[in-house]
Length: 391
Image 1 (cartoon, helix red, strand yellow):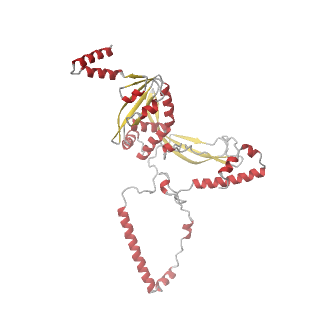
Image 2: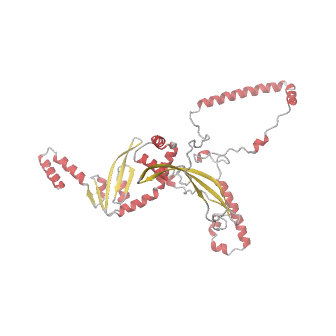
Image 3: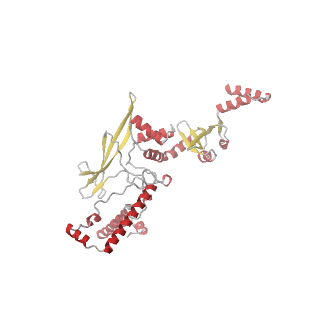
């Protein structure tokens, strides 16, 4: 890099306005060199550098370099008569060397066969993947163009020369109208274009990608996706609400909607959906804390056979779910600044909230239990208490 961080911090619009044409040309050349170097570093992968393959995305597959220079250096075999002469004039030492090479080749072949026998069944790590085999009819095409030139900032009109350079398909579901209920399958073809400006610059529009987040490491949000938002919502509903596993969801989509998706794609949809709705959580929490009355409850929830607790907090407009342990940590973090009334059962963690209402159904249950007591005095108290609550 030519320009350091300190150099870049000193460059601003006011400084640029004071520069001469010659100085600006020199700076532009320097920035171009740095930009190309930075882009080359970003594009490094296991196929063109020492970057380990384990650090790459699972769907990345290096392109086969069929036009490499090594293919042009294949030695030309000698004419047939020269080959015969070489064989005829071969010395005993050469015969011995040939026998040794044959023995070594046999050992190498046996070692290779032995390693293949020890290899685990199924697809091997780093093996070349395959594209989708299911071909659905295209129900629509969406074209994506650049609005302004990235070089000069000029607006690009509909008459601007364009060329499609890439594209992808998105499978989604469309819900019917109230008078025509049902579900339709859509397969939209997205095309992205290069647009040429009069200044000579070509602007390329690319699918939007959200920057990575530390909380969601390895989970990417991008427009380049196979599964559309409605189909993703259905997958998440089947997993979270109906408690269906990835293979069960895969079976359901194939049998009822004739959509073939791998369990890996289904798992990716579930995780991406979680990251997509993450900003909504803060908004929902704020609305809960602003409510005058809040209901809270919890129940057991098994994940991979391990016991957790499903918490629910509901106001008149928002219902928020959490899956965590059964402790006071969640209640303190979530409701520590709550000023309204909390309606809950008798779980002790709720007692830290001063403005608290006991659930009427739980109080009736407690009164019924006391009324059934074998202690005459306690039973009488329970019956009176129960009758009072029922009035």
